[in-house]
Length: 147
Image (cartoon, rainbow, N blue to C red; front, side, top):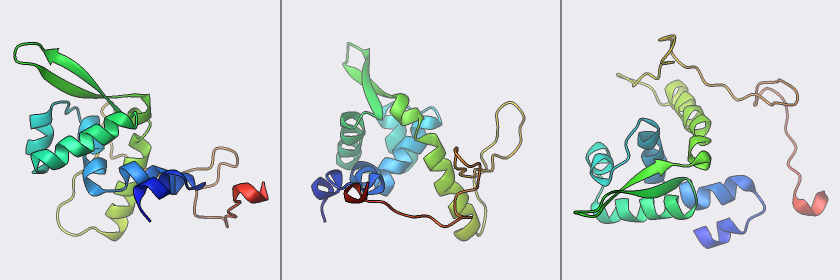
C-alpha cells in the first residue's frame, strides 16, 4: 500500500502515516518543537541528506504542519515554522517518546522537562470523555460503513 492509498483510507491513523510515517518527518517535527527553523539547523541536527530533507520539509509544508517564511531577501532564505497542526503534533511525539523510554531504553536517554517546574514530563494518553488512561480498557473499531 502506497502513501496515496493511505490518504484515502477511512482510518485516521493510516491517513496520518501517509505523510508523517517515516522517521525523518517525525524527527523534523521534534526538532521544530525544540526551536529549529532553518534548513541548515535541521540538516546538522539530523545528519540527513539535503535532498531527503528538502522532500520531507516540502511534504510537511504541503500537509500543513509547517509553513515557510522568508527571513532574508539577499540571499533568499526561508525558515520553517510550526503551524497549529504542527504544534498539535507535540503530544504524539511525547507518546512515541514515552513508549520508547519504556520499551527501547538502555544507556543514556534525553530528558524532556517542564520549563517552568523543571520536572520530567511523563506523557500519558487519556480519553477526554471518560478520563480513563488509553490502553486500560477494551476498544472497538467502527468503520464508516458501520456508523
